[in-house]
Length: 380
Ligand SMILES: Cc1ncc(COP(=O)(O)O)c(C=O)c1O
Figure (cartoon, rainbow, N blue to C red):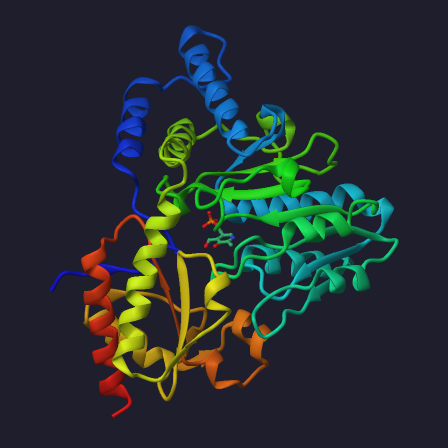
């Protein structure tokens, strides 16, 4: 039985051109970009050129990019770095209840340091309301962080609207764009964000590399201490193969003008239609027409997530859920809990399907058939 990968929101396979470019750099360019000899200078030139390309891909200046080990580190650097550097202006931070744990756990750490954090609610469709941001803003708010595309349900948050309401406030605005970069064309100036986190492995690039965009006036502290790299904000020898891989990954997408958006939407729609025609009892979490096309989070009535995940794995369908199975019991997804309230059945019977580079059209029909069979068996 052919295994079918429907977990692209967790990570994606690397594009063959990414692997090729990384192999070349790994084999040939081993100098340290900080070394002054010709080996170092060659590495430095490649690093600088890739930084320029990646900065331009989001409408930023090369001096506004800080390479990190991925989305988690970029989120931590944004939240904790900004909080520590701006605490003289206030100690209040606003984030949301549906962020990735890289953000929420960084915010909780800040609470342990004496910062006050407001976690904005979402409505049943999974959206943060700009009016809630206005309501919670205080003179001592120093940072607002709202993710762009939610990694569990695929809701696209109103980032530009929130940026507008923050325009005349001292608070910096950060967005976690880990699920958005490479799917939709992003321009930080148009979005109106001050900081933005990105990770390469969600767009067919390598794992363990990403960047934080921070516009030039943003004050933030480094969280590591060491050498002079990344303008003292993120010391450590740069992962040149990783950075080159990330550049080639976005370059592929830009070269085909983000057409993968429509391709993945087609995959999702094929899969969805097949489920609809089957007559099984399911509902989509979030408003289907408004979701990012890569993510479909579905609640299957009268099932439980643990059984579903195990059965789908046996059927060769790789998916995940926001629920964590700990010590035999299921801990409900924090995102679905924010949408529906705790103890709602949907928080414990929902599965995330995510589409992308590893898929083709035929797989969508086959995957849906396997899902339908599993649901029919479990709800008999
Ligand atoms: C929205 C979001 N933010 C942050 C991260 C963390 O990124 P990384 O795996 O590169 O640390 C992820 C990864 O799942 C994500 O989906």
